[in-house]
Amino acid sequence: MAILLGSIADDYTGASDLANTLTKNGLRTVQTVGIPDPALALPDVDAVVVSLKVRSVPASDAVAAAASAERWLRQLGAGHVLYKICSTFDSTDAGNIGPVTEALSDAAGGGVVLVTPAFPETGRTVYLGHLFVGGQPLNESPLRDHPLNPMQDANLVRVLTRQSRNAVGLIDLTTIAAGPDAVKARLDALRTAGITAVIADAIFERDLETLGEVALEMPVSTGASGLGLGLARALVRSGRISSDAATTADAIRPVGGLSAIVAGSCSKATLHQLDIAERSMPVLRLDPERLLAGPDEIAAAISWAGDRISAGPVVIAASAAPETVARLQSLHGREASGHAIETATSIIAAELVGRGVRRLVVAGGETSGAAVDRLAIPAFLIGPEIAPGVPVLRTVGNAQGDMLLALKSGNFGGEDFFTAALAMMH
Ligand SMILES: Nc1ncnc2c1ncn2[C@@H]1O[C@H](COP(=O)(O)OP(=O)(O)OP(=O)(O)O)[C@@H](O)[C@H]1O
Ligand SMILES: O=C(O)[C@@H](O)C(=O)CO
Image (cartoon, rainbow, N blue to C red; front, side, top):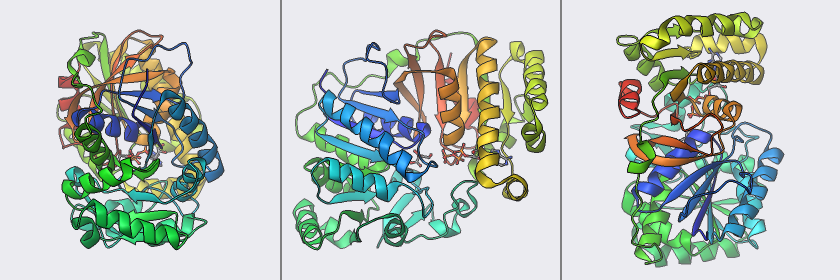
């Protein structure tokens, strides 16, 4: 199997978001969980997205994991590798978007890398280097209260500079609107000035098509699904994709079994989706203090689910409003409380699968990563889209038999996301 495009995603929901975008734009795509065992038979595809769980780990660990994934993707034939980051640029000043971008550039022989989190379909746009989420600058959006990486600066040139060894440049919208040649000329000038990473503006998909065309001629880029869209469309236009169109239908053959939803995302979108789900399904709100105190809360949740799940889907959520999260974090620390809750929700997900759940929705990137790791799922095929950025996934090579999953990024999905997801998973 020789692939054309490789991607390293910094979390699992982000990986499925990108795989969905690549599939929708004509690339046959598989999502792997880390670098899979060589014995795993992967389908014949144009693109491979390696899911890593490195968004919130020390930058040196992220660099090491990304470097191994890059080597594996190049061995598979990838001419271009996209480092998939969050469309809201989730990271701290000690974050790894800068270090991983610079390391991937070094591995490819040096040179400048385009960086843009723009994803217009979900309202993420970049203008003069400033990221907007819907109508709001990043630092005024709900992301300012993120439990792990509160985003308090919308100026991405500044944010990336704080994480980078080298200076960071900007390609503004006027240059991008002038087309690929203008972008290349500007990149040449920035390269000569010693710049490695360049934040690129993008508001419309046509901007991302221009950036995708330019990026495809370079070995590495960093961005969210919008840049994936640009790269996929450029590959299709180049005539290098076989006419065997990407198909998602096979991925949703029924798997039967029980269904459940596990949520650890504390985003505004997820909190509202949980309120709406409460009207049609039993929802258990976990007590975060009790979760941190010991295993009793987990056992109580499994027992609660056991009493109800044969009658229909159940929802188990650790998610809480920013004030509650802040209180817990002030008592136990940000990372310790996040990690302990992820461990708890992943144990709950695995126990539910042990009791016959085969259709599972998980809300939250870190939460999904922990659950998928505990379930030891090696890879996914990409099914149809439930909501922008969230496809149905079918497991490949899963020890528990075929399952359908949806891994929802915290901020994605309409208010009825949970019922909409389960309605597509049989
Ligand atoms: N009640 C709570 N108090 C404190 N932390 C919590 C609570 N519930 C969940 N968490 C933690 O908050 C973090 C939420 O991150 P996660 O990535 O899962 O969601 P998200 O950030 O909304 O999603 P995404 O990264 O896809 O945007 C996890 O570490 C989770 O364990
Ligand atoms: O890009 C996004 O917003 C998502 O794919 C994501 O990574 C959120 O975790």
